[in-house]
Image 1: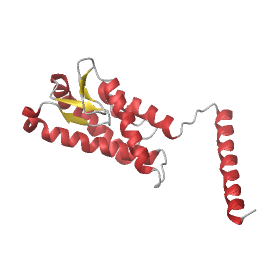
Image 2: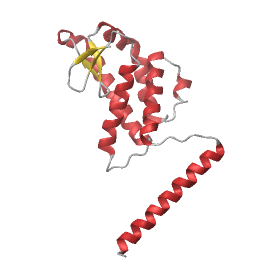
Image 3: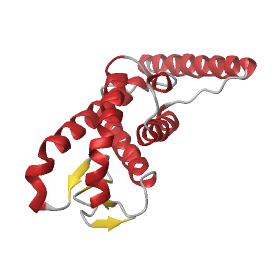
Image 4: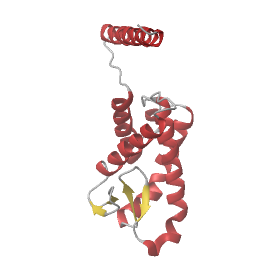
Length: 176
């Protein structure tokens, strides 16, 4: 048996044993663990609900992944939402399938340029910090970051009220 195969087999066994130990401990403690994609979906659902409902700071600290830049981004998004909402209600801007906001009415560009830029900057930071928090490695980071942004995009759209506009993957505007 080649040495490389032996080393890979040994490493694989350690990973399986480690994961088994973690799962066993979580079962004994009555705690549930969420990894990667499942954790991202839960986090996206909680964060968007928190922002749309304008929950206070103590609720932000209850998020699975809070702290540092992630918490600061969530606070800024929550605090900006009252200024963003009228533009969403009016249909000047809309959420996108990939998790950002986009201009729907080009004639109003000058009025919303600053708020759209700030919102998208904080959403980008939120997605990067979420990817880091769930432990994505450098090799898979770009793919996972895209997954995070589309997961959040689904929540921004899904939790938004009827009548809001959203931009689908084909770059076609849809009305909820």
